[in-house]
Length: 279
Image 1 (tube, rainbow, N blue to C red):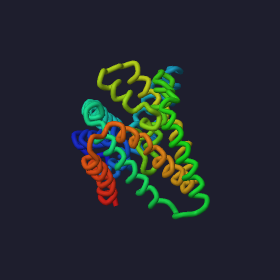
Image 2: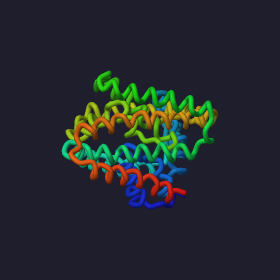
Image 3: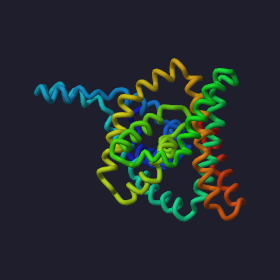
Image 4: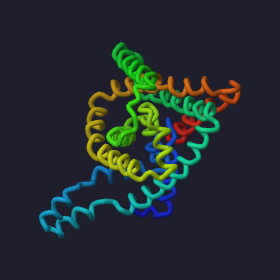
């Protein structure tokens, strides 16, 4: 499993990074398609920060032994590829949002709606319980997005929490971290941060992401195993309710409906193509 070459892992990281920065496409899906998902999940679960304790105690042999378990052959090229792709794509998407706002949000609309449809197929069908939790998710997202102005702002604590939640989304089926940022009204701001290399905000977000993937992801993983159908139903509602955000941006900025429909259909089709390839 570990014989995969560094350039290949780097390339897969680039594809994952491109997916990670687009709302509606999960980097986990790309990892699955490219055959790196199982190794990635296993490697993350193997990370143990006890080496810090060993260092503090002066037990350098114990620390070295602990660190040697980390799959650096995977993480270094993969994270490098993801980081490079996110940085480059952030420039492109920020430009598109500024100059082709309606078309870009229409593309996001198609991606998110198709993701909700694919997520529904993973559930156990229609039941009163599933409908109830979908409704709760829908109302929560619809109202939250509508408070454009709940204006939770872009303070460092908010950016930290956003990073943690965005990375936690990686282990949830059919949902992406960029979508979470979109719901939290942090998506465009974080694109702006990357474009202008505001290192304090970038570091805060990355630190939150690290905490999220190492700590909260285990709680989510446990909840997913125990209450999978409830969580999937809630996520479907969440995604449908959050469509209010791209819809508002489309309506307020579009000049013609035909290009918007084509862009939305393109986004919708991509999810089904990725799902077909995955299967």
